[in-house]
Amino acid sequence: MTLLRVLILAVVQGFAELLPVSSSAHVIVAEKLMRMDPAAPDMTLLLVMLHTGTMLSVIVYFWRRWRSAFFQNVHDAKRFLWTVIVATALTGVVGAGLIEAVEKFAFRGQPHAWIEQLFSRLDLIAPALAAAGVLILAASAFDKRPAPDQRSASGLTLSQAGIIGAVQGLCLPFRGFSRSGATISTGMLAGVPRVRAEDFSFALAVVLTPPAIAREAWRLMQVQRISGGANLLSAVTPSIAGALFAFLAGLLALKWLSNWLDTGRWYLFGIYCLVAAVALEILYRAGY
Image (cartoon, rainbow, N blue to C red; front, side):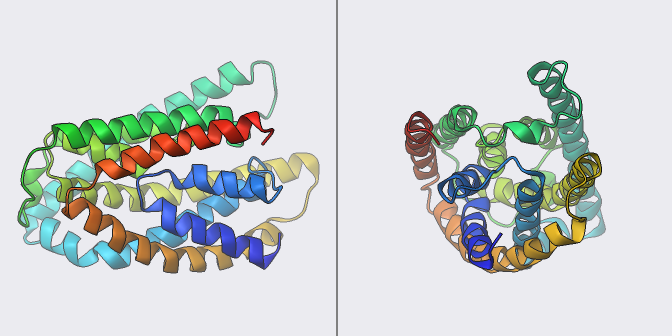
């Protein structure tokens, strides 16, 4: 894996991760165009490490907004933490259950099967991307509320947080079903103001990323133990450089996303997802 390829993937990840257009789908397409195997353990670990870079950019970019929105006083901070706990718990229940079910159904009778082995299939990514586009368009159509001022964490109820968390769980097994697009749109449909849904969605991403890193590192170690492949360090080293590049690209993407959300152009991301889904189907039929 050359540094140039890592840089290309990091830029794609950094710009797409924080936009509701499914970074995974874009990175997988880039990998396929460069004749790389997106389902290989070292590649899925690289993808998660790229997520780490964008997670750090989320913290840097959103910290002042989170402090103003969720940490103005002890009451708001406690309520925010409870909403995160509820949402993350439901993400774990729904996501882990779906992953287990898909692995048993899709790989029946196959030992050492992981859902990541399906991540390179454009015929599965395209409909997931289209579903995200439809959800974004639906949220745009029903969202007629004016942009809010800096509301406290009480503006997001536990039930709304739970719904958002459950939908985030639906995103975990399916590449193309944009996590940020689905969670922000779900929040909007549940009555959460656009800006608050954005803040909460990316706060959840920060919580979700470390377990994802741990899962991919564990998977890589298990695969290498079984196959006798290269050590973990050789796979992690290029990923560290990718995380740095993704961090820088992520900061630029976040500013663009916030601007589009605040000016009511959320629907354009839905249109993009639908167009991209058609493009992926064309690539799949062309043999990618």
